[in-house]
Amino acid sequence: MATLRRLREVPRHLLVCEKSNFGHDKSRHRHLVETHYHNYRVSFLIPECGILPKELKNLVTETGPYYFVKNLPLHELITQEFINTFVKKGSCCALTYNTNIDEDNTVALLPNGKLILSLDKDTYEETGLQGHPSRYSGRKIMKFIISIDLMDLSFNLDSKKYKRISWSFKEKKPLKFNFLLAWHPTGMEESTMMSYFSNYGIQEHQPKIAVSMVTDLQCPVLQSSELRGKLEVACSARELFDWLGAVFSNADLNNEPSNFISTYCCPQPSTLMAKASLCTITGFILPEKICLLLEQLCHYFNEPKLAPWVTLTVQGFADSPVSWRENEHGFQKGGEHLYNFVIFNNQDYWLQMAVGANDDCPP
Image 1: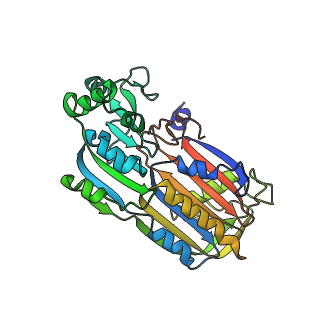
Image 2: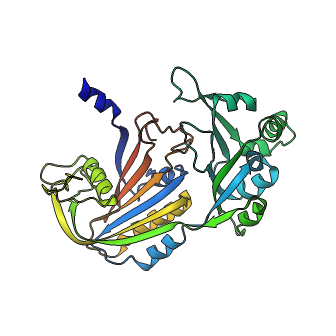
Image 3: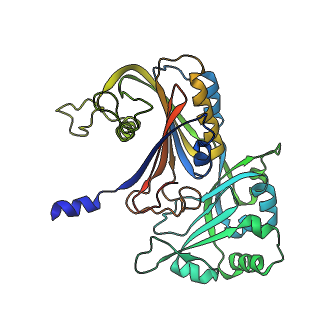
């Protein structure tokens, strides 16, 4: 019984793996990247590479900026001026900062103009707005979800619906949050976010970039056609996924008897890479920036390389109210929602998507 109890306490997750080719008409790689909105870490690993190519290095340095706004009233995100300036003229994302999705009120703005509120029972009732119970509430409903379509509202600012929402956020239940914001304009507009929110002490930030070279790295042998692996021939997608987690955590992979921290070792079959470049970008990173990185990594194999594959891993904010699209996300015991591309030199790819066991299956 004690063993079963401990197993129940272990965080579990859902992992979906699929393979395709970037050249296929029905490849959905771009759609999956574009609909995973709130990203805080992007990492890529390039075996047999000591120095990042210039084009890739330039893209890495251009993944920002993003912004931090303190005590921003929620009603500022539903004004006509904000919608016309940012929501309609590009990809605008916002997420409450330092809030716990399973305990606190949390808000997210999606690039499609949807404003998602995850509210506790008292706050929800005080707003007077219509929503639905969170799927993570359990028998006693303690959290509610409200979805507001800003694009729809902007077409009729004189409607009863808009006036009710505006009255709720301004007078009935004024809410303030610390927000992270990012904006990718679609046209030639200059970014005006700093001046737009100047009354709220806005701060501009650049993502943190860490580049390192790993030497003598034992890497799994992969074959693009063998997603499930093949005994003594190639490792599976699941084995690679676990191995990447160990590499990004800087864990020892030699399974030394004297190592009491990690007994993990590289799955077999494997090969020794003399060197590998590992780059990690941490901040508030828009999907558009990740699409550019993915495209550049595909071009990495335009010229012959020693590396048989490269990887791109993207992790979402654990306390975002959504994972992909508008799928509700919960923290539970892990809060993970992430995806990983394995890009092969023949333009085949593996796509691995993981979420907590209580989330909807990744799309």
